[in-house]
Image (cartoon, rainbow over all chains, first blue to last red; front, side, top):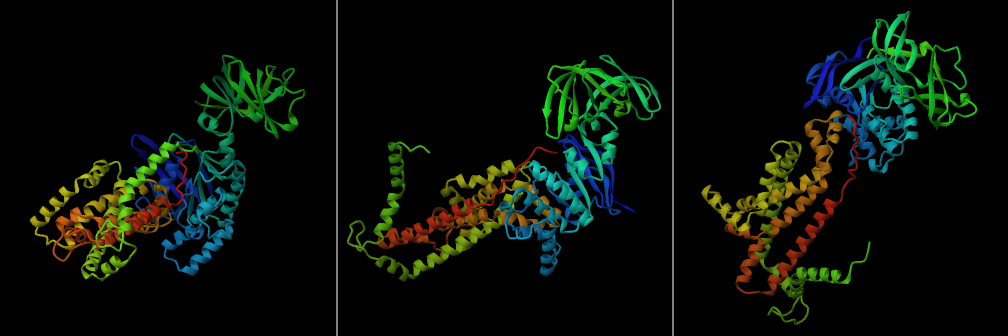
Length: 360
Length: 267
């Protein structure tokens, strides 16, 4: 199977700022690929470069084995869902969705049929004669989606598609987006800064920061085996500390930190000595109120700093010996009794394989 | 809102009176049965009837309309291109262009009229319709550009991006997106240009030739032989038409699509 979209060494600068810094990326047919990164990481610019709205300084963009660098946006087999939808305010929903087909000079009956089919897919039946400003945020979002998808793009580009929606609507749309992607069987490339959104809907994720693509992998790989502390910090809450490796043995390393006892954590191949950054996910922190339990290799003493009740789970914040704040995430059913009180001293524990060391 | 203090309301009322009393008196006297101007002798529409029967006035009206339509049309054509170009390349030469384009609006009209006459004579352009249309474009073009640019400033370039992404060529973007969205401003600018052209006297006076007498020129020549009620009637019609045009222009410009696209600070 051939890759549908290949970026090779793409660079794009805006004046002094390097928005996209030597990015190479291969996206397979039918994939839901998310580009995840904080604001200003260059992910939207990357999308615009693929769409042809920005011209890269160097590098090549190949879509279906054809180099499209020189093609203007209207000649590329991709369509984009813009961040604020960019619906045409002077056109009805029907005309918005029909716009691309009109540009292709399709016949009126063809256009009508395609628009109506698309309206069914994105659940906009009966709203075709409205103007965008008469629609809710979620409906506008679906018009933007329909307007792009009706052209049957080889790749659909989505720029923060759910960012403008409120929390509840966003969760509904996440599922719907995934469903629509499976329905039309099109490659989706989605830019987002919401890591939960990316983890939930993506087949693969590329993590971007400061113009660079740091890691590409499945959500599981990204979450469980981040290649660097930047990726680890960006994907999900994490607890972390810096230390020095003293020795390693079969994938486990021993780490020295001036305020902590000797710690053990997973360690990638090739990491044998020197400074490391250790990450422990909040769901891997085990709380021992009275005395440390022997099941876990690592034990730290801590003081309860704050408690945040989230309904189905509780977040505990602890102050450690090095004054850093760590988080533990405990499901509702496993909350210790009696309740922890702020200022209470206790122990935090985790198994060696639940933490991982990174080389930076 | 708090009620305004009485003296302020009075001052405002007086100001409006100051502005409109001459116009009201003019319109009133145009219905005066007396031929002697200022003494009221009863209501009559005879002056309007006389006006319509006068072929030279009809000719002047047609001349005025032709000139206003042509100068409006060409101002729009050039103004649209200029406004879009200036907005797109705002960072480049647009700032000095901005000043240069506005200058003709503040240059004393009599200077502009003399200057235009000299240019036409120098270039041996025959004085007549053509020279008047060009003369009127000197103030209609800046007017059009100012109005269109005010509208274009609210135009989000993301719409052009979206259209291009959906397969629109540059020409299609212009005809399907930019111009339709500018339509209220285009109609507003056209009506305003039309009115200003219809009412212009000074520039027209200098650059008109035989057979191209416009309405304001006709009014001027009529009052040279004395203030007749016919002039009142003609002026009253011109005032009403002009006000209607300006009112419509204002209405079109205030009618707008919602341009409420919010911009988040994301990459």
